[in-house]
Amino acid sequence: MLVTNVILALVAVTTPALAVNEHCAFYYGSQLQTGVCTTTSDCNGNGGNTFPGHCPGGTNNLCCIRPGCHWTQNNRCGGGSLVKYVDDLGGCYHVLLGRCPGPELFRWVTTKYRRRGVDGGEEEE
Image 1 (spheres, rainbow, N blue to C red):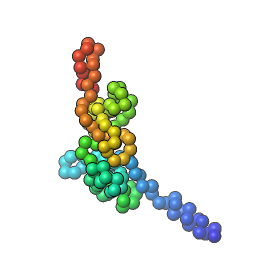
Image 2: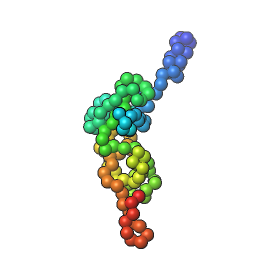
Image 3: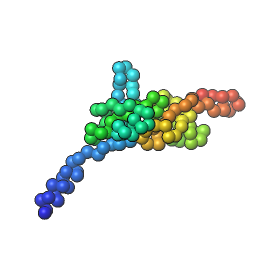
Image 4: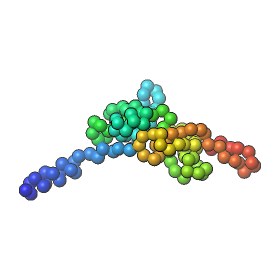
């Protein structure tokens, strides 16, 4: 019984986590693709395409790319909860929820965010 418990404990420790909802990136030709590690069913159900070999874990954990979806950051732009800094685009954009697979910070980007400047004119963020 003790040997069985030790073996089970070792298997649990050495099995890698699936890393679902983590960032993945790779080059397709000369263009950088950024996505989220997820299952084929989650990706395809949200309009994405899966690419194997770019996420740690099992064979069902694939890099999901959906055009229009980008990784974002909170609290860098102001402008409310639907304005986020977009890492790979290097600026602030309006984003929409619920159109991309994966976690909340993998969002659909709509338009470049413009805010009023000090002089009343618009400045691009």
